[in-house]
Image (cartoon, rainbow, N blue to C red):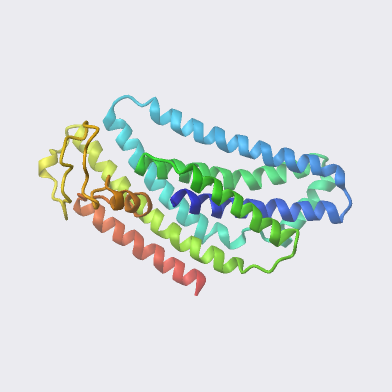
Length: 280
């Protein structure tokens, strides 16, 4: 679910950018720039993949488990703040047709590679965000939905095509309004899970004992050890059938500490307040 929302939102924005610039090239009859347009798209995708690879590599090269836990905590906090920044500030000007038209026309006048750089940097921003958000989502659940990724990307490209090339009237504000609301929940979950990882760091580095941490609630442990293949989880355990979904989307934990719960509520209050002010 998280993969679908993240990819759909970011790819839709990227599709609108590409579509608008494509129409500008077509209308001005400067078809020689089409190749540079697609070069820019593919180069930005490769650069985004490289960003994701570098982040994963950096995490895996860290020494011990406590350092990795600290890295994930900081990374999840930063990702949550990036989501808020993107959806409440940068998205105010997303796919602004007049701005893009001006940039594209100036780029075509200045250089034959101007369109390449306009597209590259516009799409790179979306690709960078997608890579960072997906890595953070994977850090929480340890799983990745390829189906959600593919459906989100295909649906976003299709909607972008209908809007830009077919002139279909689609209420984009409503689309972004509700995907933004879902991202608010996702970012609060990242704050919560980042706090959980901070706890892991403190425990693994020997700064605090696990028994000293007060749990707001503690769902039943598995009936067998975690290493056993036949482990049976309570449905609301964060590895159970219901808990795993809640963990991936809301940062749910079956035995949260007090700061984890408090920060989740504060993040939700902040996000929902910003969402209400932005869309109402």
